[in-house]
Length: 315
Image (cartoon, rainbow, N blue to C red; front, side, top):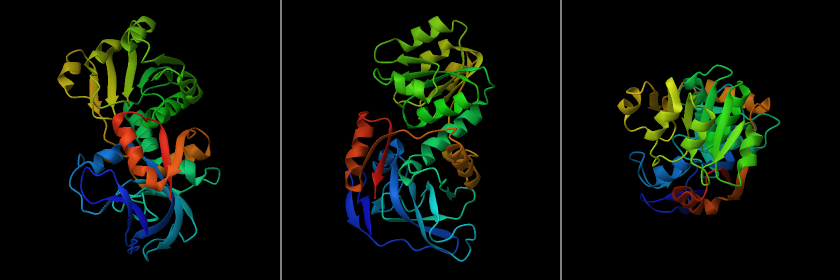
């Protein structure tokens, strides 16, 4: 099968001819039609997410069609349209294998009103946003600042928050303000033209209730403590909280959010995501659909910050 893989950490990635996986007793073999790209993919490729075996097939998000099932699988059959997260075999390939739904086995049937192209962009970013909103546990009427409001996770975060009746302020690059508003943001700050902290402080002198940080892990977010109300929360999905005591000293609870440790990273979690997509609670906005062979260059663009929205690869 064709797969985008690397033979050592740090390679850009190229097309390899590799054996297709075989569905074990509790596994589902999927013929991948589209693979979703996430910023975490280049971090895995560059060796920043632990040891791996080579050749390493990149990617995790997928959408496609069930090709075969193991004897222990009863809820899926060949021909079913599915989407999910390929944790073990990678998704930038013509085939991947996934465990039947359980803890740490994330696959669901694709809603009839969702294309494979759009379904492939949902799993990691959608589940991260959904889990983060659950973790923040904000009531309707609260005010949430979403940093990176038009990115993958941030864009879904804006939509889930809006659906819960939360007032959303989103940061976005200038030129993307309308995109943020279409996603459900009540107010938008162009971070490359305005001082985000000053703008939030002027509009909310008492502080916002919470911040969902979904931009760059290299960001210095220590100053955010000044725009969150006492007792408020900051949640970073890109691991940008480095000194929790700094925030705790100002009565703000700040923490990093790890999707794979979330109750949402399950078969039940992706079923919830599928229902939200089917009900149009969330919409998938694609920045681009590109050939599988371009995957390595796409990862380089994410790494350098030239891309931030949702990109899928046509397999």
